[in-house]
Length: 298
Image 1 (cartoon, one colour):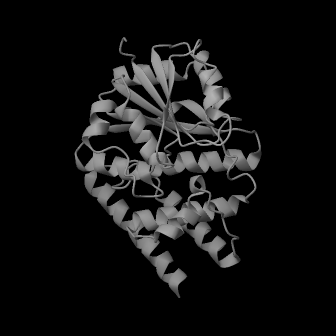
Image 2: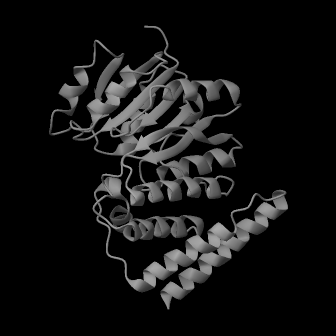
Image 3: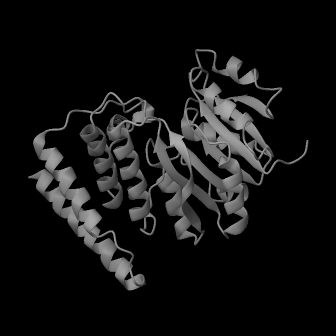
């Protein structure tokens, strides 16, 4: 079997409705030197059967995971991959037909070890578009920090680098992408955030919630991450939508904290002139967050 350029790893659990759309997008890519590895966590619907209908159109195979754990499933797919580059996708992503061609271009042009891209929402709803913009902005704000954030829904990474640093941490329930980038940064490994090509990120898990409910969870994640606060495992699950947790209502006091946090961070969103300025910026953000946390505890 010849080695493909990309190995696309898709962890699944009861995705019979959405997975075929992504697989259709993959069949229509202008770049076709890739394999697809579906790592299924014992779906109770027809996810696996739907995936197997693409065997004549795609270089695709299915691996059954013994664990229902998205990090374990991604790691299992990586260990069984053949390509030098691995791309992790969520099953409900949508791709323009030039997406893989664009990613290949940047893997050849940039001396990088990992690439992720900006997202666009799956509707033209103003609230969804606003949430996508906030997400993309958070990438830009945090990419030069000690703990840059990333969506695990699209990560392209060199296989040897991914395996060498230990893959995704299977013991954490949220922020596994951020944890991966933090370990890479400590080892001096380069990663890049691209504004193009964008992929469509599904907001279906969040759509029933208000924008402020979503922002409250994002803010709590970011505050804990940036202030290096350990959250109890059960609380992590509540905050992390991919684990089925529910968002809770936002009271006016919490809403004001979130607005205050984002406003002050946005005010600091200017490119630092040098490394010393970056350190000062990071310290300022930490002070702001500490101040908000103290207010929240009072």
